[in-house]
Image (cartoon, rainbow, N blue to C red; front, side, top):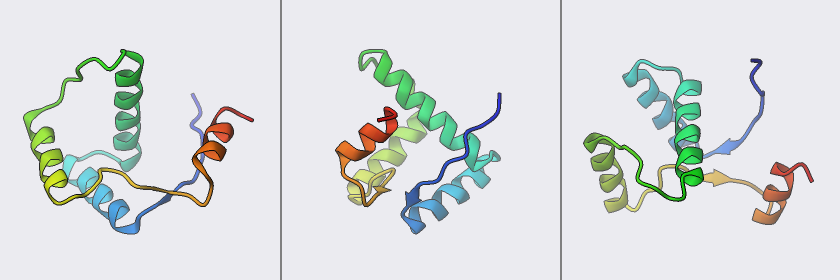
Length: 90
């Protein structure tokens, strides 16, 4: 299956941290992003059921929360309504 080529605006510091994390895990950034997207979609489609998350990931998220950081920040000049319409092909 051919991949979709797209672009998004991401906070530069977040992007660098994600790249470094992918390197430490020995995977590509593409693979890491696809894995995270699949996990989000699966969690949403399962009616909000519990996801299997390692204790290490939970600890990392808790540390980010303590520092008032978000795992991802999506920057766009478009409104949320515009982004949803665009995603739906409208």
